[in-house]
Length: 110
Length: 112
Image 1: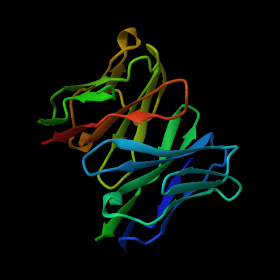
Image 2: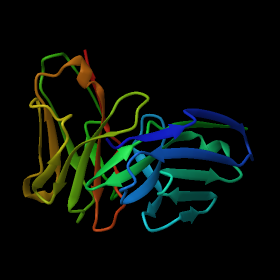
Image 3: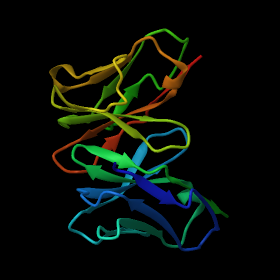
């Protein structure tokens, strides 16, 4: 069964801190790994997509890595800001569907 | 705005009633997905359309659920004889030939 797990479930950090969110997946036959942001009561916004043949992707202050052999991905956020407060979801694409983790709730305190 | 739109944004219904949700994908996105998200969980895949063909359905999609995508444009998701366990956020996403899925704002269903 394809399962995605995210650790920690919640994280609170002071503004300016660098942080790492973790994602693990049980089935390494992953087509790609995606990170999304979700604000309360809203839909999902795509942040980064890493193809299975890639090791990392970067966008601004965000960097995501993928290690298929260990079944892990990390999302690194540099110099966190209060506006980064949201739920961060990772998802593995298997065939036609995305399998999501439960998310990490991030709060950045000013 | 050319993003994915969903209607209604909120729906409150009584147990046993039927409800229908609509999703309008981004123009020319031939792939459309429905997901369900309950509080504190990530979205769970329900079904997938490529153009008008429904190519995959999750076991979560019981016989009370039906989805259509006539003419390969907008899609509807109907839930018959709603139950309290159907209360959730229903998310629609569309996807072009690339890999990124673009999500709509969701329809929040509350079954009393």
